[in-house]
Length: 276
Length: 159
Picture 1 (tube, helix red, strand yellow):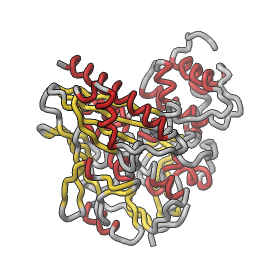
Picture 2: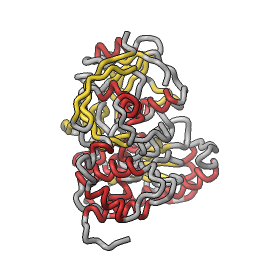
Picture 3: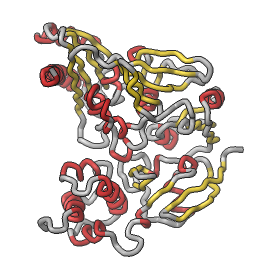
Picture 4: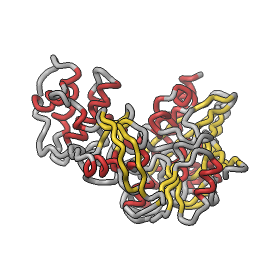
């Protein structure tokens, strides 16, 4: 691997200052970052390890009408967390298919978002649940909806010196159901060909998060009635722009989107009935 | 300046103070500095699991962890499992004929050891999930999974 300075700041202010240096990158779980460094996709001069930052915790806290997931929370923790499984089963399902057990023990939810892969597994459920991200520069903080967090492949709204401190997921007020679906070439350790998460409420409002079918994870809203027809599904999916790559052709992605949009909606409706 | 650091890490219950380049992985440190070469480097990107170690209580890919990140932690490698003779799981691998070329086996045994510490009597699904980050190019998965289940319940049917 290339040579770099390694810093392990204890506070957000120190972390932000370290990240303002030229070619400094933030390290959380390292499961994407170290691969990128090894492949020389990036050659940072400084690696700033966020795991000792006091203000970035690795807890999941129910705080009134929302769940706050600390920036240090790893995928394994999400998979087993009682609140996440009860309130956001689609998020637990997405976290459970990231990489492998070994990867999930290191990879963080915040890191998955900051890496900004169009195929990030946890982005669709976070979008479907209308989550937001709290960003800090060590001095001031701001909150950005996940729907506005991604700017392009590998690019987010994070400015130099900013880090994701936590992710907030609002707990649905009314009766609702959710589902997660993912198409991969093999079950373990693969990136999504198509992934999606669906949240439906009792009024028939539907919100989807869609992965690997556009330059960023996408959010799309509709209604149960609209999605009952093929035309409605086509209108709904107009927001997507799937490409052909090593994992699948654009046509196949479009076909899988239609199938799994229907299936995920049915599954979410089923979950809502079970819950009610 | 900060391109070399001295860390303290406990490997297989032995405490080491060791100076490492910041870009050295935990795997490289354990193999080249401590001479523990049971953990293998294969894919180097967290897909094959041949480098699996137990960090704290959890199996991890040691090729994706910097040695400096492991400062202050406790690590178990394959050499720390059955150090006083083969563990029941290792015996089960032998009895089930689960070892072919053997390259993936240290990672498999470490990952399975972590599973059995969490789940005493795992289902086949649980074994497959726990080992889904470990590749065996010989394709010996069936006997490997049997070996793990046999270790959990020795009276279970033979392969």
